[in-house]
Length: 231
Image (cartoon, rainbow, N blue to C red; front, side):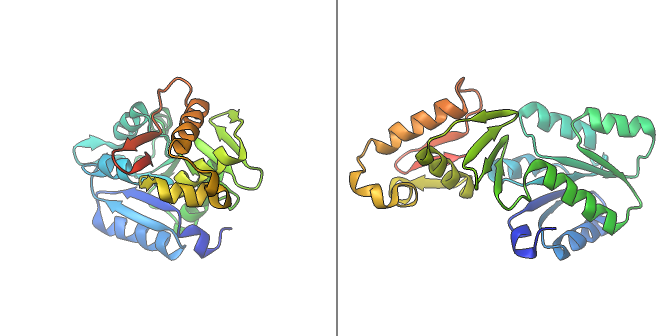
């Protein structure tokens, strides 16, 4: 099991329209050491996902305004591949099948055991690479910090040491605009004496071509007057 300090870096989104159940789930997850963001509906979830990088979503099926599996299917269509666990009172076999077909990764029915919930959460996070202390996950990328390797989906991507350090720096600071001075110090370090104005542009272009050769995923966006941001 992960220790508490390691879990603090793992954020879990819970979407549950019954406030008492939401509070109960939040309590058990936070007690286990996770960071938790709870929602009573799906209204602001997509905006939250645009700004943050949660490792897991726990979703009820019976939500106001939208059925939970429909919402997950919409998120999958947009491109979000965050692991999803359905936690719902809908316990028919057809409900379970619908849940998985819509993009769910696990399905748990109410009433639920807090101990089973935590075990399932840990298993999902472990499968996704989120809780491996020597790995970092962002969207469909998994960085192995010991082996200095990158996997995107099922594909291994060859990176130079500098490219790996550059990507690692962005993943550690996802959704934040990183300026050139910060990148120079973090990535180039002692070699910064050989750093030129175009050095970052060249390195960024090479990295983007390796991890997104077709330019379809748009991992990075330029931030005018500052640098780049991983989104």
